[in-house]
Amino acid sequence: MIRGLLILSILLVTGLAKIPVEAAISAEHRREHFRAVEFGLGLREQVGQLGFIAALSGFRALVADFVFIQAHVAWERTEWGRVLLLFRQVTTLQPRAILFWDMAAWHMAWNASVAAMNDPAQPRLALRLRAQREYFDLGRDFLERGIRNNPEKPQLYEALGRLYRDKYHDHAHAAEYFEQAAALPDAPSYDRRFAAYELSYCAGREQEAYERLHRLYQSGERERLPTLLKRLKFLEEQLHVPLAERIPDQLPADTPKR
Image 1 (cartoon, one colour):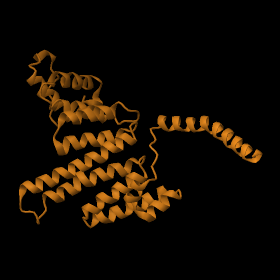
Image 2 (cartoon, one colour):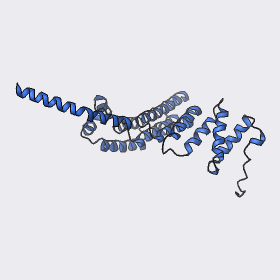
Image 3 (spheres, one colour):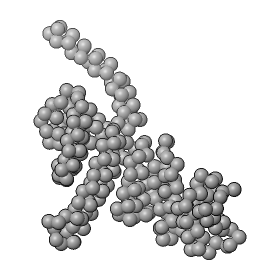
Image 4 (spheres, one colour):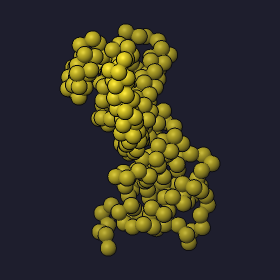
């Protein structure tokens, strides 16, 4: 009886001592946007029995690298279903690895979608277009889930902006994600410029786009790139900007800078 009470007391004291430590660890994970991998049946279905055992043993990074190599081999063989499966596995194992999310989206939205559109085994254009769109959506899903796991990193926002721009031709969403990327630390300077470019294609937002592009133009020579000048000129015409307020016409390419 006394021994049982002693053991119970030790367990109680140990449990109480662990509470602040575990709370601190959880808070740190939240600050770092860390989403721990849940070692349940879902993960086992994703990575298979051997991968699941390895993940439980603390070798998630090693297993993820091995699966990533397998995905590359599947890509070389144009086995798109297997590429999708393997990238789902690798992103499940290493959700904080930006490269895996980015590559998964690229393979789906760019490579697999092109293969689907050019599939000689499918004579019906409507079905090829549907398959292409499904691969676009798979790429978008990878990027959206990657962002949820890495909300502080600009790379995936930028990749999602490119996807909306180049595949969906959705300039409003492209502008939104380039802008979100630009607002994050360590974002490249061109993200803000890309956001303004995309906004300039959005009907009804010409004035906002003009003001953004003009601010970039006024910020210095480094921003006065051909695309920016072209979009500014276009908006000046659309908005009927007075001639006195317009930027100078571009000099011929062979004119030396002064």
